[in-house]
Length: 448
Length: 160
Image (cartoon, rainbow over all chains, first blue to last red; front, side, top):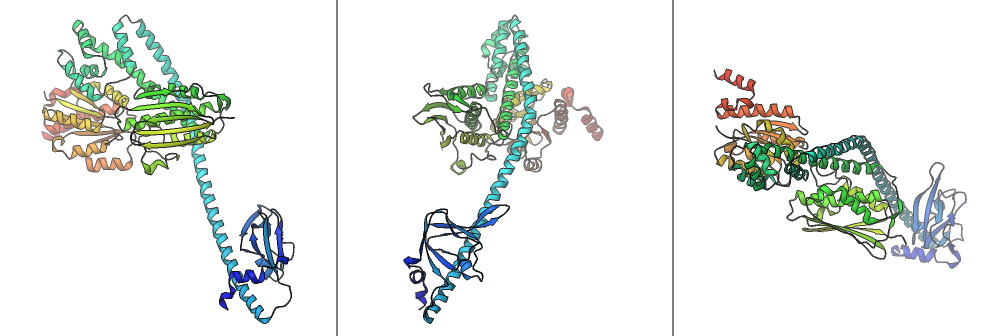
């Protein structure tokens, strides 16, 4: 007998009468707390949700029932036959029902019915428990997400506050430095000595000689009499060919200090410019975190945003072989130009810095634009060490960075900012990376 | 007169430039070497030692590609040739752990935070070089201009 009380038997025996079949359209109410219910329903098609009503938070779901699940268990068994929840079809559905107050059965059938009841109750307990667990899990996940979002937004606001404060000071430093540079330029220009003017200009390109190279060059100066160690050390790193300098020194032995001074003046300007640019970039990146509104325009030239980014990165790109390829037939599109500039800056900067810090041989970076029928496609490619497989998934997380030196290498926010901006443009970003070839691809949809 | 060297290590060229500019006052008595990596610094120090000269002071940054400043300091402290060499960790990014390691395992003499103050740096270097000259028993009169007088006096008092 035992095996007779299977679900199939229950279904066959109690829930197969075509006269007791109901069609419930999507959105229709099957059970209502206001109405008495003596029926037990079995769903054979579709899906229902049971809601509790609460004055404060409105309807919230307490259970769901799809095919082969029972509905109305509580009201069917309870004394007053009232349902505690409102049960609504979320799809067009079919149910069979069994009514408690129907005609009598034979004693044998009654026994089977009680076995059937037990099976239903157990089944219901299981379903409720499962649903409760699922809801608890979801609530837990939600609160975790919320907590994380809150943390990020607080961090963003704080960072933006700091950035705003720094922005003004850096603006002053940057501007004053520019004026000072102009003034020094003018002074040097009016200086009669053409040679020293060239030395100054060489200095303004920054030190291009490595400390190791300088040590080799130094040997040539060490042969010259009358130069101090300090003078030699400095002359060696100017990058001015030693034979030229030596010729000058032969004519005028006292020229060493002047050459060093003019070169240093130029080089100091260069270093300050790099530092100011870098600070400006960092501050701008950080400000992006807290800012939600930006100037959008319907008529943006993507190529223009790339060119602008390359101007800002001028000093950094000098240190590697840089190629820019712009597809001049790209149609203008709707975008936020200021934000896109940030994206290119971050991608290019990242590539270059990874190559420099890993001392990649013959470092190269390439940024290219192109388009197809649906998208504008921008690629940033470098020949650096690549992104290890195990961290590829995490590179767009806000707190993720492989760069330990915070000052030199940005704030580890770069790619998180990129990701956010790209998403805001309905664009996608992909990364393909292997040692010697890393390529970021951004696809911005064209507006049709 | 024996040649004394100050070795400066920093992977950022701009920082290295700024540092050596601040060290110019010592340059009449001490040779200054600029190095952009730990490896380069090690090669230079070995060369100095091979020439029979002295590495009096090592000033190193902490965070650099490949090897850190603490790596260099540990290697140095384990090498008998540089037993008397004084060390300064000049950094903005060393963690608490790095610093403890530098002191415990590499016998760091001094820690200076970036950005440094020129006067503090000068005073520290003077003290350390004086100690080096005394430790090595070198003829201190020839370096008088760059030595710390009070350290020198204290030492004289002790020995006499």
